[in-house]
Length: 395
Image (cartoon, rainbow, N blue to C red; front, top):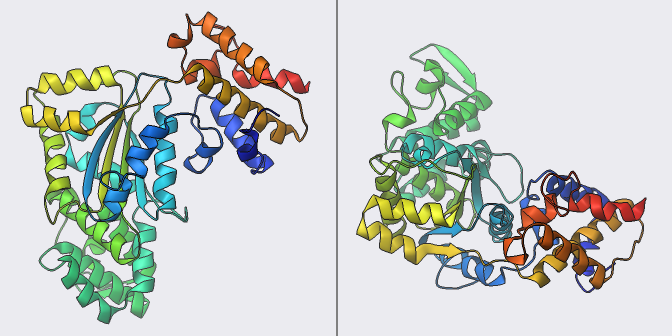
């Protein structure tokens, strides 16, 4: 066991320790609820997004809309950090959506962006994903008579979300819904699935469309997806959630970019809706990516308002120090002790030695990264991960 950092890791069970170790050995960040057991550094960045009263989650909880860009080099722990933010959002009672994009063109298509968001919604109780858990909770907690007041409060009237939710409540209360147009009867679970499928941008059968108040073959992409996103946010607020956090991570090191595409306009739209009254209040968008790439992309767009807003919302992750890396090695060693159920003392000097050796292999501390320390501590081309290096102490 090493230092004072052991206390946090020792509070977790063996299965959790093994899960964390397995993931980091594969180059995958721990689950959001597990990141706190291995995170190091970046307290200032966490404070800005989670603890400042004037921006970030605290401000969103009070009713504002926010947008941020979390930026850093490839392999420098961006995904670890964003999972930490996801965990903090969950602790604060937010629903969240977390998904990857292959390239920036993915957000130029509003329908694709909408589907990515709603299909990946997660809840504080981790009970299911997507829209279905939200609609089920709505049916269980809001009566048909209460619905009219809810619809008035959140502006559902005049939008098809009203008929979708009204028909769903009728089906839920009666156990079924008869669709006269098709002369079929759907049970309440079928109607729930139809509503969920439609709201997630999926293709559903004609009788299912009729069951939720749609006429003919229809798709959510033929309407304003942002209005649906806003109404789903309102539904979450009514059900007691404190906000909606959307975390969009780049899946590849290099993103494609075409300044002539609709991507620039999409970013401007999101900015505007986050700061306009009656739009994306209680919502926070976080884009995660490579700083150099995003800087060049925004500059190439040639849109001054977008450039100004981007710079104000940019959060560049600080580099890890030697001490941060030593702490990371110590935390991995502590997790291994829990996984093996036995002690294998690792001194601070030994942990530092591992860090400095890794730094030498990669050209110095400034060239070391969390990914390199975890996956190739003995140099590129070697097969040993940090877990392998430390695991030898238990053999």
